[in-house]
Length: 283
Length: 322
Ligand SMILES: Cc1ncc(C[n+]2csc(CCOP(=O)(O)OP(=O)(O)O)c2C)c(N)n1
Ligand SMILES: [Mg+2]
Image 1 (cartoon, chains in turn purple, cyan):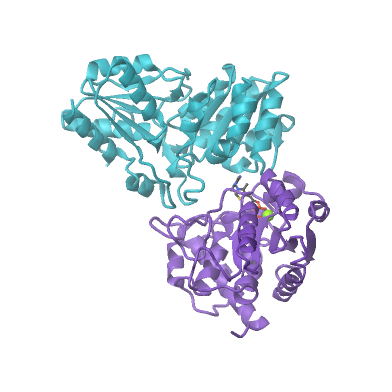
Image 2: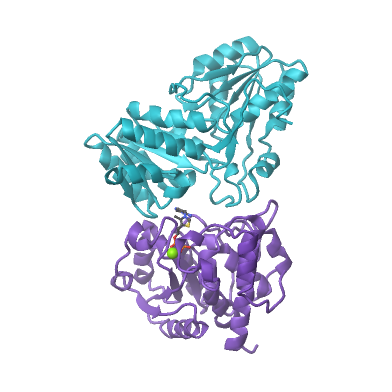
C-alpha cells in the first residue's frame, strides 16, 4: 500500500484533533492536552510507520505492536484507531459513556479492537511492551514493538525497573517514546519532581537515545521513527525523547497543564473547531 | 423523588467527601503542628492545596511515585510526625500494598492513608481507577484501621479525629457531589457505629456514599409499613460488633450496603460477626465480582445494583427469609 504524503498526514492530524476535542466535549470529561500534543506521533505510527492489520488479532503475530502506557490520552488513540479502520468512527461518540467499548482509559474488558492491555494506572506500559517484544523474539517474529509514556510518568519507579530490564535481556526490537511536554497534573514537571537529564539517565541504563526536537512536526516525527528503526537489532532498545507541546493545535490550550484533564465548554469547543479543518468528515 | 419523601435525615447542599477531607486536613494542620502532608501529583484532586499553601514546609509533593510516598511517610513518623498521604484509592492501596504492609502496618507506623476517588462513583475515568477492592485489602492488614465516612461533614470530622489516634489508618472518600445530611462539627468516634434511625424489622448496615441510599430506602420502606434500623458503619475496622449484634438481636435480619466488592467488603465483616455469634438472614448490596466501567455515578450505581432500589429489594428478600 502506498504511504500517505506529508500533506495527507497533516490533514489526518487535523481531523484527529477535531475528534479529540469533540469526544472530550461530548462527555465533559477526559484528557485533551497531551492527546492533542501527541497527535502527530500517533498519526505517523498508524498511517505511515507501523505495519498493522485492521483485522485485530490480540497476539499481533507478523505485525508491529503499539502500547500506550500513559493511558489517559485515550482520545487520540481511539480516534486514530477508528480513522485507521479498527472500528467505525461513529463509535467515538460513545467515549466514556456507560456501556461503551471506549472506556475512559484503554481496556480489553469490552473488547475494543486495537487494545492489547489495559492502561491508566501509570508506569506499567513499558514492562508490558518489553514482554511483548520478548514474545516476538521467542516467536521469531521480526516486527517492532512501540510504546509511549508520559514525562511525568517517568517518576514512577517501575519505569526504571523496566529501563534496567530491557537492555539486560537484549530487547532490541523495542522503540519507546517519552512525550516530553514538560507538564503533568499539578504543574510543570520541573516543579513537581524534576526529571533532570533524562537522556543521560536512559543512556546510563543502556538505551540508545534519540531526540525529536519538534514532535508536532510530522516530518520530524517520521524521520526520528525511521532513525530509531535503523538502530534496532544490535542488542539494545531505543528511546525516543519526543518533545511536544501539550494542547498543540488549539491556541488557548497550548503549553499549560491546565488542559491536562478538563473538557472545553460549548464556546471553547466552537473556538477550537474553528482552528481545525474538517478533513475526513466528523463522526 | 427524594424531595417529597419523608426521610429522617435531609440535606440542603451537596458536596464531595474529598472536600471534607481537604477542609479537615487544613483544620487539623492548624491544630496539630506534627501533621504533615504528602501527595503524588494530585493536590487539586485531593483538595490538599489549602494546607500546602498555609504550611509549605510541612508538605511534600513527591511526584507520580506512590510507593516512594508510602516509604517516606513511614520514615516521617520516626521523629513524631503524623503524615497524611494523598492519592486516589487505587494508588493508595493496590499499587503500594507491600510498602504499606511492611513499612507501615507491620512496622506500626502512624501514617494516615487518605484515599480519594474510591468506588464506582468517580465515574467516567472507568475501571482502571474505580477500585472496589481497597477495603478488603486494607482490612486484611493487621494493625490497620479502616474508615469510610458517608458525607462531607463526617469526612471532615474523621480527618481531624484520626490525628489523635496513634496507628495506621486507611481513610476512604470519593469524588461525586453527595448530600450533606449529617451534622456540622460532629464528634467522630473511631470504631463506634452510629445508629442513625431506630427500627425493629430489619437492620441496614451501610458505609460511605451508600449510607444516604440507606436513609432514603428507610423512608420508602416506612411507607410500606416496614421499620428499618439504619446504622452507619463509618469504621469498618475495628468493626463495632456490639452495635451490630444488639441491632440484629432485635430485628432478626440484616442488609449491608457498600460501594465495594461483596468479596472482602464491610458486608463480609458483618457476615462473619453474625455467623460466629448470632446467625441470622443477611443480604448484601455491593458489586458482585466484577470490575466497573466508565459512566455517570448514578448510572453506575444503578447498573451495578448499588442504589436505593437495590437496598429496598434486599430488605424485602431478607424479610422473606426471616
Ligand atoms: C499510578 C498513577 N498515579 C497517578 C495517576 C493520576 N494521573 C493521571 S495522569 C497524571 C499526570 C501524568 O503526567 P504525564 O505523564 O506528564 O502526562 P501528561 O500530563 O503530560 O498528559 C497523573 C498523576 C495515575 N493515572 N496513575
Ligand atoms: Mg507530561
